[in-house]
Image 1: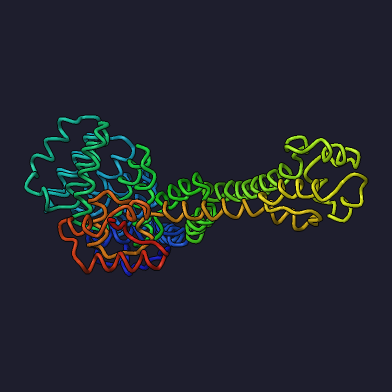
Image 2: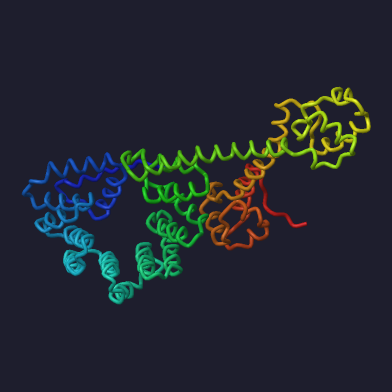
Length: 438
């Protein structure tokens, strides 16, 4: 998981960076508090410049740092070019001035702005303005980019999502990822929708894919941590919160949530300890009257003030036999109720506790197996081809995978012996295997 990034773009150079370079610069700035502070300092240094080029750079920088009202004023006085009108449109859209945003997108075309970029930005602006008919026209005007442009399908997914058409939206986001595996915005939208629709396993998988590539994506890291905390996977949740705090040490939400997780961890472990103690006490507090004993044995134990199983375990064989009227027959009777429970007379306190915890250990082993099988297949770190095939088969967890046979996997298109061997090797390393037919 990468949490840092570098960028060589100088926003305030003599020649204004390209749109692609500005986007890379924006991603870099928002990847950490230190880079955001660095840009803020540069803005202050250049704020009074009368150069049209620098004023334009300051306007773009203000938009990147979220100061959109100031950005509009500064961009208005900047040098005329496609960068000016595009970022002016972005800033106006952020503050809800949608009609003016559309006007500036049209002006950007006069300065040779990419027609697809402008059409998609118009579609997003119309969608935010709830003018869905106008937005749809923009997509239709660039329908030749279907199955070609990852941005086209991403924006079309956003359009469907805004109208509550979640299934269509997910289809478009998936197409966007097929065209570009590192489309983090599409991966995030898929993760968010899966989470919203109750498919937590898929949501976690998509968020993890984001976290593997590029700088810290705060929203993805936070959502992933929340999902893991809900599953009581506290150590993993804290790992992702720490990744946020590494690059954004003053993120209030991350700081508060980390405290919540640490509190939950303490409560969780105390609860487990109490459960074990309760199970042990339940064994020791079992009344002697619960067992089928002869009248002689019962009377002898009663006179010895032995009322519970715990009392009985503190007595040795010799002590019982030394009691009046308590003979070998009664001793065998007592042993017959203890042996099936792996208990014996004269057990010391440590041995009693160990016995009480044997059942706990078995339950814990079962729980560990369940947790292993519930892990996402993404943890296997498979090749892209193998991962795509598993996704097509709707295999999300190791448990899902172990239910499949070799033949079922090989039946998937583009899934070959190389991918099969890769999966078998990964499963073997975890002590797991594919299902075998009798």
